[in-house]
Length: 317
Image (tube, rainbow, N blue to C red):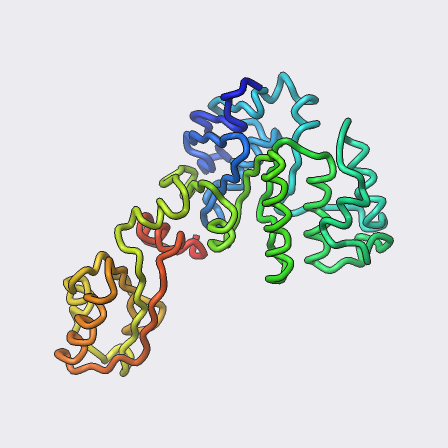
């Protein structure tokens, strides 16, 4: 691979399933040594995209280059340099953890020592256990171990921390950060916004097969022009407040956007500053003769960016 060539490069990638357009002319570059995240709801095209990049699916249109090579021409050379964690991994349930990792290590011309990988993923106590006897979180860690045992230059991770408890998630984050510090490149998909913010140098938000925003997590949050989120609900349910409350909230000082919350008379307000928006919100409630039942503030997240761009939440699809 040329010194300046991207680890992953694709242009105009299209994938159809009958009348369904799963990937719609996607362009993407991932630089060497970075962690890049694909974010989006189920059905957005993330898994289809990553399977095309992994060589598991052929695109209907477009160009794909991985580590300076092309699928269909350099397949054996590429497979020796990739680590792949699928969204669902089907491992032989009658093999032990150590037997599974020895099997996967045998697929690669180079790699890590199996015992080292078992230690990294904290599977020492389960090394002789059958895969079929592992918990969901232990299976997930074993699947990640299988992706790492070949010492890959590029690591594909599709929802790598699903099923892990918070402590195990953070331990895996630390492992991935060490992998990057050693020069590795990561492309991952995730539903966890805190995970994307903690791990990724850049992210792309995918919706309906297209990238609708791309940049660092902080850049994307700043792009909505309102770093603060106020979640407020009024007492009395649907009967509380005037019918034009959404319009009134949107007219408050330093308010950038308003959307209905999950319950009646609950609202989510994005604000450029809290010191002006909050007193104005309290004054609006008093003037309308309604009582604020609950109010919380937080920093805007990538979830808020997605809502601002699409009008729906990540989990809504």
